[in-house]
Length: 288
Image: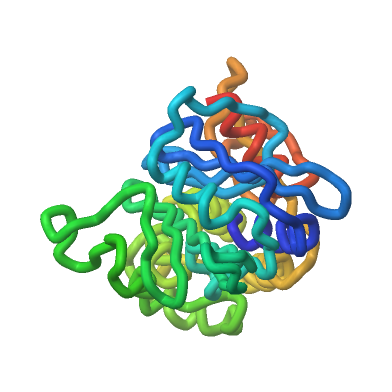
């Protein structure tokens, strides 16, 4: 989903300027950006159960006394021009490059990085490869693998050795899974970069009408359907329109979302379609 969000942000926000920074929650930042004559609200959240990046129509106010990280972002990003939105493959990390003026009037690039990784999510401000600060400081006591502290070199989360559908052929994915006794949905999560459980379950359902089907139980028809759907997903990731879908329980509670149509629940859930990835995330998380 993050790739679709980034694509829209690049269209809507590029060359916009930061008008205001708000921190309504301890791990949530709102950037008010004016671009193409329109005011936009960009939400970045590092909440463990709701980490995300998206445009929002839902305003939130910050506390009377802004947190220190909010003050720091105001100092380094206010008036900055958004020059680029970057994502490495399908990794759940998005980088926003801002052209800013520092304390002595020099033009510098400050990068705000949102790492969308569950309980390891973070929002980090970086300049010249070094961390200025982050919404969550990660010390050696918290992680023995990767520190995130002011003044140290920024290191991106280690990229997993997985296939990226932006770059690989679907046949490579089939070759990587077809002989495994594992469930197809679980194996796809291990093999493919940046996929969600609801997506891999939907792929399994599309193949054999069974979300728990083992890889080595795929019929010849199931293998062909796997390739067909992977090619369709690859096309969406490379620019074709997505099918942005919210899944809800019968009582109306929103349960999950995906960028393809969801059929795996066989009528036990309802689905609604959204026009954009940003609109989907805004609607989904506003209800949580």
